[in-house]
Amino acid sequence: MWVANFFVGGSLTMVLPFMSLYIEEFGNFSEAYVQNWSGLVFGVTFGTAFLFSPIWGRIGDKFGRRKILILSALGMGLSVLLMGYADSVWELFFLRMFMGIFTGFVPMSQALISTQTPKAIAGRVLGTLQTGSVTGNLMGPLLGGVLADAFGYSATFKWVSLTIFLSGLLVLLGVREVLYSGDDEEETTSYTSKQVLLHIAGHPVLLAVMLISALVQIAHFSIQPILSLYVAAIHGPNSIAFFSGMAFSAAGLGNLLMARRWGRLGDRIGYIKILIFLLFLAGIVYFPGAFVTSIWQLMILRFFLGIAIGGIIPVRIAYLRQEAPLSMQGEVLGYNTSLRFLGNLIGPAFGGMLSGFFGFSAVFFVTSALLVASGVIMLLTWRKQQGGGKNRKRTQPVSTH
Image 1 (cartoon, one colour):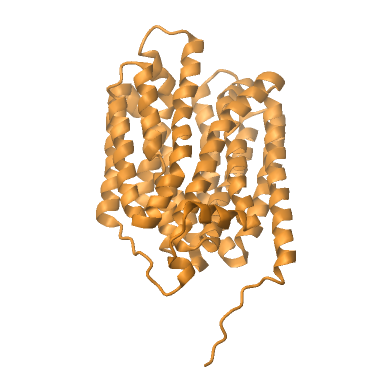
Image 2: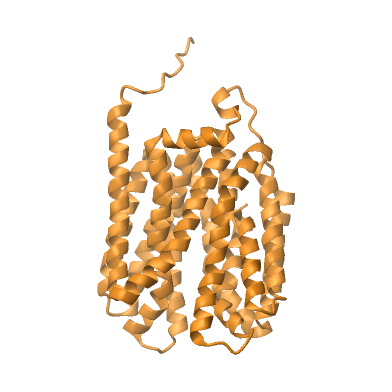
């Protein structure tokens, strides 16, 4: 599963660096036209994924998540393959929209591994799994650039589709899913969508964790559209692509190094405690980014940001694994994934608007405040539950031996 996530993570990021350049090949367009369509083509995938993630989650609960992963790889692979034959921006737009229906391989793999893993070690295992997609995300843009220079944009889409198909083949041949058939009625009961939503609403900490999924993605993605411009502002135009890539990769490296460690620590002392700490840490690290004067200062801060962000996903998924019965986990994780995709949609537009009206520094200030506010919300919700939960503790069975 780690290798499949590595291939998917790398494949999907291979084409992002030259998407706008590919659009330019369709005609003699103005710079504004290319920029607008680049944003639309990039965002439409998340829009479709936002709508379909809960549906796939519910289907996975009923029929198994392994089958959904194979279907997801086939759908994404076919979409990317056909993008290599596109000859207009509209065709590319609709193919990216179609791909969004199946974009959810990594979250669905997290749901699969979560249900196959004992709760006591879920954080560590999910942290390890995350390093697969993160490693792919780090290497993808570099390999995509090499392939595009060597074979052209169209051929690169076709090569990338092969690695996605290979991910599906790995799942088909190398992954086995054991469907739960125990005696625990809560774990095996079939739930309607209304019951799933009521379960989420009835658990304030669970609801807060899911809503914070969107806030974290908004914060994290708000810097994406302006990072290259910010690097140019503090470093100058020399080797701008290289240093922008270094700034992006610094966060990924921190993520890669710490994701498993945060998950393991969450297994030991509690996922919510780690999540609250990481939200505050990420907010604190973001703030000084507004004052950097060299690319190396920015890269160091991005590295520490990756350390903080890297733990948020595995401890969040592990907590959902802990709080949701197995027979509804896919749908719960589907809603969580939808909220993440919603954040992916809002974040870049939000960051671009802030920088356009108030300058680069405003993005760092507001993003920092958003993460700290998320930490405060999480802390207050958790403490309220802890205070009220003393009278609502689940009765543990008493051993007669």
